Image 1 (cartoon, rainbow, N blue to C red):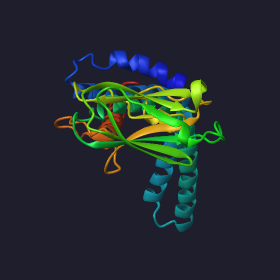
Image 2: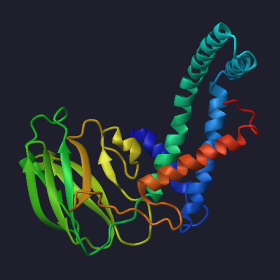
Image 3: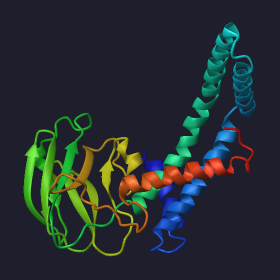
Length: 284
């Protein structure tokens, strides 16, 4: 996961913003259309186009039989059964291509969300909770009393609440900047050091939403993941109300936040795919 995210992030960190830092909506629309085109090309390459065409034509033929001979009960039943069979064949031809097609689409979507779904934390106000979840498979003997937070200037650590499998730090009134929170997992000089970034104020930019070794890392590639041998399973930041620390980014006339970027991406990419399938000679 870490390698996959690192490769994609190194690419998209460069190509996003070609239209200017303030034109997030152009990036979202452009890459959504491109995602639809990529999905079409992958679908065409992987799918059995001839088989899909035969299945669709078979369905049309049997539907025509029903319309031409509606009084032939046996014929209608037979044609209906054949339609169901052709439909099952059509679905079978689509399952694998659809799954393969979603890989590049999801890669683009997750990078778009990392860059444009969230805004930095407002500086100088609010209370936030940094939660460190311990991976007991990797560190069965780690005492949460030995988990410490080294905060930079501008971040006030107001409280520390340990439980058997996690530690929660209360952070208050962060100042503007890209801060690095250093977590020490373990006692003495052999303690593992995990760094969690925190984006506060300043210009709109990609924010470090979550640090994890779980599958959620694919969804939030805002910063590098945790190695498999780390004592921490995840390090996350939440607002005092239990919601995300990072607010939804205002995208103007487009819906913002994770849901907004997701909705725009799917509507535009699917629309682009349907509109351009004839241009690329793809049978859906």
